[in-house]
Length: 570
Image (cartoon, rainbow, N blue to C red; front, top):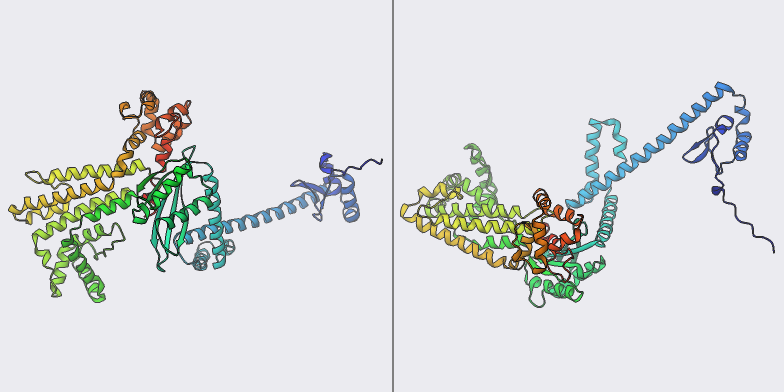
């Protein structure tokens, strides 16, 4: 039987470029290729026979006459030419890559700011004008950047696909994640369901991202919303047993006791062996509390006056000119819009600052505002200005990315404590208005016998506000001990934690090194390094909020992912 011929593998023969070929045959080794310096053709195999044959058949007649130093100079010249050509191609490739990268980044900005895709070309025109005047030698580099409408659309699609891929990769490593849902109606009366995701992996790395935007054409019952959420979670292949919480905006379809979205999701998690809690968006709760402080007899005249001034073009221009002529502190009043949560406080503050100028202007127009001469109404306005300023400050403190639920709830508890302080100050024999600067400024215009009656009215308003905060944030009472253990493990009384954690909590509290780290690091960084310590399992068991096995480091990660809606949806 004839033997089978094996195919020859030249790359296994260990052939290498020989330095002598450069001088003999004008060949060089460039990027692992045997290249002729004269014609820049390549020889596939590092073999002297092939190199010599190429030289003798194509270049020997013209270059054999070069010898010694002349031949060496020629080789050096050809090497310089080859190197410069390669560098040119590298520069061109690098320039094209930079232009493409810039195109992607501009497309991302266009998408983030909701601008029309066609504005890419306008942006490029602006950039080209700038370049022509500042660095004209770079004009061609910027001209290579493509920002045509279709190109921007493709770039955004590519970015979206890449974000989805990255989110899927990160989702595979999640230890826990929470969902936040907010449903609203767009200009075409189509319900849009925003589904946000916040997850944490074993290294305490936090991921916040929009999971999906679902358009709902029909009804928006809890079951309909639940179907959309299930579709988004299943498409990303996220395990339901790792859902630690669901945060909603408090609408009936979201929080219904039997068929609300939050209830259906918690049931789904329980069926898959998990345990999820339901929470109302913290910042939305705060806004609802603020709306409880109505003072309609103040707000309605203020809004009516602002609308009167700003709704008529002539009035508005004359009012602005009037403020300019008398060199007022501000140049205009601000509209109040309910959907803008800070609008009420800013509009009231501006109106109060310009109250005298507004009164003078309306008197000139023969439309006096009688309330501005009523001392009782003015003190009500001043109180409302001060308390809404405090509420706005709370609202701002609850905003921002990467917030942790323990930090947000701490702001709420601090504000409730402030309300108690305000309440006590206003009911003193000599009312203390230190924290009410606007009220303090107009209080002397109030008849002395009416001061205490007004202070009691404001104290009652603050009491009602405190009660509203207590009612709306009652859900957090059930996890308050967990939040305390998470945020201040060195201050918690061991008697107040579950028995299976008490001994390890005492060990942690007596570790001065860990105590110092806790003071220096943020909560997330502290738990991250705690997981990586010499005894991470024993250390982290302190934070196992609900677990049959005490050595599972669950609670810290669950708490970290429990409050995304309060910082993203608004």
